[in-house]
Image 1 (cartoon, helix red, strand yellow):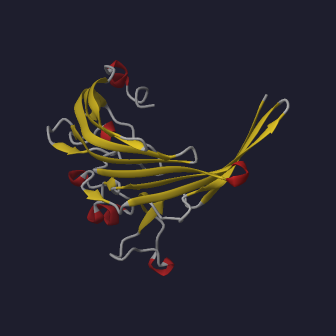
Image 2 (cartoon, rainbow, N blue to C red):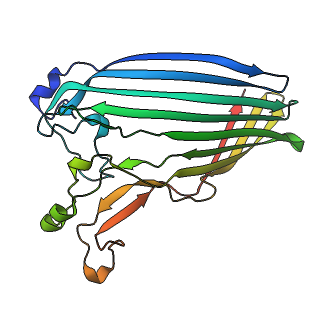
Image 3 (cartoon, rainbow, N blue to C red):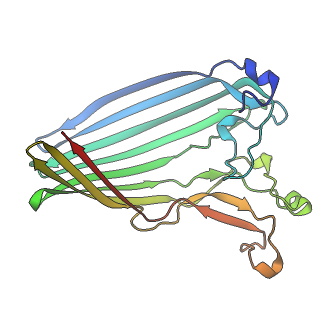
Length: 256
């Protein structure tokens, strides 16, 4: 839709990317190994808005189900990400496996005004832990714990939003604020059944077991009235929208 919304957008050049990565094994033992990697990614011909020199698709605000905004674009933007990651893999006999990873990264972009700003997916710190344990009776329990820095977001321009009774983003502060830290625990039980003509694999568990309210974004409530008591602590009709909470999952697969 971005290409079809304006005739000039159809001539945008394809985005180019160059990625460089260097890795090495730091340590290896009988029960595990420690690896490290550093990487950089450079992007060219990123689409940027001609009417708003600080705005580009790399940092376009997620309107959370509201109408999309289509703008005239030019492919003169650039972006870059870089980071380092350490991964520890460990195991105990054939019954358990553990993977721990820690990442430090940065994502920046440059629009028409030449200023470098934080990208939508900038995550300075990311920690992950994956484990698998084989229990008696052929049952395996798998878990994944994720912890990352909070999402960046663009705040609303309170004065203009109140004056026009609709949410208007403050484009002078694109991705200037960061939400609370992200934390999510997933757990799953797995059981395989063998038959003469095949194998049945059943899995059941839950995502976001701790029911964390991880931030998705903020929306401006256009129909908010004082009697509805929908204002936030600052007296503005802004609602925090979270990602999906605790969610059960189940699957079954039969191979023959």
